Length: 436
Image (cartoon, rainbow, N blue to C red; front, side):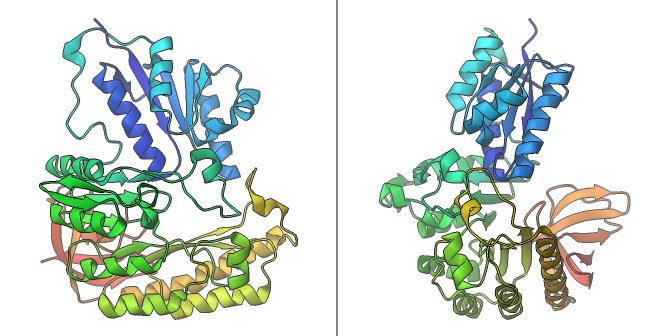
């Protein structure tokens, strides 16, 4: 008996990747096999992204490619909330579902490609099907978001905050650790708001009560003995509580905080949470407690109404804050976003010029901060082994978005190894080191 074969395309952010992993885990547990090619697949599922216009186009193009190469396509994910737009371009799709639609996706697969009835094919590893390498995994702790940032349409696609009970999250984390995962990347739309919707309800975990709350989650995860990296954290005052856990080595000294801007007027136009917080003062306090903390952030330049003086204020914030890792985007109107109605749009040429200046400014800061680490001995996690040696990540580097550490000649290492290196060279974003 030949098992039905599913092709899968996963687009968008790590939170969407976790959704894809859950769908694949369920399908694999039912006896479906996963095809790496269109040709061998009996049906293709496309998990889409609809966050910005470029992501929408990528999703629509991927759907079109799947239809052209295979012909039988089910669409899910964020763009699924705009079914009319999908069907206008691709009327041939078999089914369109939105986010949080695992059961609906599975039911659609069953309808168009019935599951096998051989129980011996229903074998899935305890950690489920993962789309990341074996040594790291994303752990999604909640869905949705309570904020209404004017440039963002995520709440309209994913809804308000819905936190997973803390015992459920910890059980998944433990399964992943036991399966050999060396690093867990904690993701959600607003990680620091975790548990707010559950009123921080406590659950039993290993004979004790643990509250569904950011600090308590971080503390419990820190007991697993693996790298724990926090993403998408807003600078609320209660985040201060987690910094001592970093100083003690319980979780990685790393925070991904999407500041988006530094000017108070622009932040108010963006309707950013914690817009009134003194972020520079908070950063200084964090570094006093944990001098090695790595701070990553993302920013938007050219937001409607942004003046040259307000942009210069943002550059000064970079100088004062000395952030380690930065992502930046020129503002792009997103269909359905409230910011589209704001006056005084910034010309495209000005946006691109500001983006270039921003990145050049930050590159100097990044290069100087990396130079300070030359001569230090650090633990790194091996990502890849190539002909010239090994490519690794330090505790300061999240996969795919931050820098890397190159170890020349270390071809005997294996992916997932944790090794010690002495750092010898640096450029704007990456480091070179030797094994010790």
